[in-house]
Image (cartoon, rainbow, N blue to C red; front, side, top):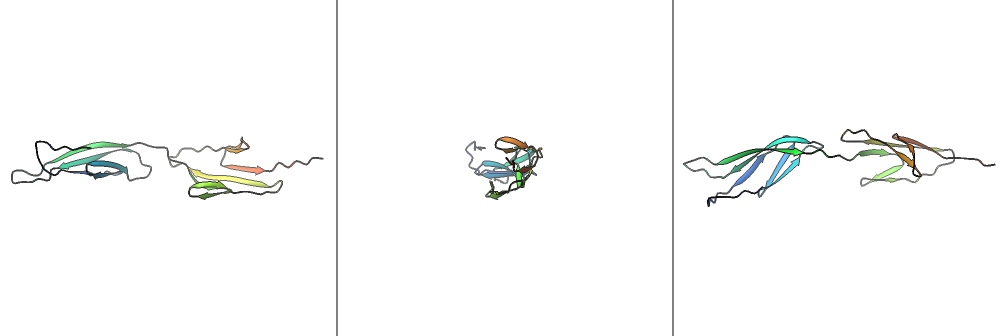
Length: 149
């Protein structure tokens, strides 16, 4: 936002705004930044700006111009949050599989606990050697023990 002075006036102009319920406004040297102050919020709210010439004399009161605009924060698809993944360790936000050693005919029970902040239904797919073996949040791996005579 650029504000120009006209008619040779030397008044120092001040731009201010009122924050809305979910949107904060920061103004520095007439540069305006809008930020949502509520995680995962989206929608439209009104923000009112005030331009003040900071001059009051005996003939008139200060000149303050008021303008209200609508600010829209668009919805984005937030990342899925994984809170537990069996046989894996999380470090700095990255899940790394832990090595496993099992005996013949043993079972490894794989599971994942995850949520979507947007409330979308999650779809799961466990693959073993490129082949899908489960489409739920659980997969039981059993070794393929075959006795040859």
